Length: 217
Image (cartoon, rainbow, N blue to C red):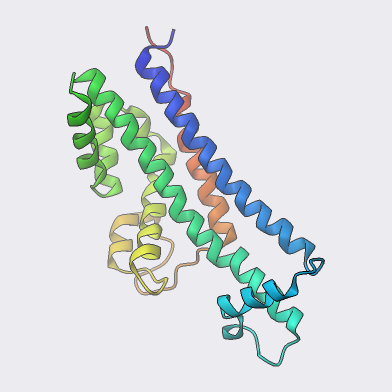
């Protein structure tokens, strides 16, 4: 039999899982559009896209117009969209964890909702390693599961995407990712379609671990 806490936690986790699946759907739709090229009639829009993407930075200006447009699509699909969606994935799961922490703090410690929300925000402002530890101490023991350590690296990558002009493994990345770092200090960080799909798989596994928590009376 599920308790009210478990029902609220599972509802919130299901919402997060839906949002993650929507990110995957959005990415899939981009590939459908790319597969249909050049079947669209509105070429003017595509040329504008190629200019905004600055496809001339990675394709010779002597190439045929269709090649320039296709290069712009591939840049979006292979690099820019995965980077934006990886940022979104971390926002989704961290918001979910914060909401679950509020539920736990209000129920287990009897804190008023506003105080519980403030305490949860304080926890989630920490580094991933630190907030996972704090959440575990709070009683959210699912974060001790094997998939949750992968969150450290994905958050570290998100921070580089958001705070750095170049995608390289800086000191902050190395410190946060720890032994899961994908590149040595100063080396390029690849955030492409493969990395996005790996991140989707990892975050889904984390959310399913929450949903798999046994019922208690």
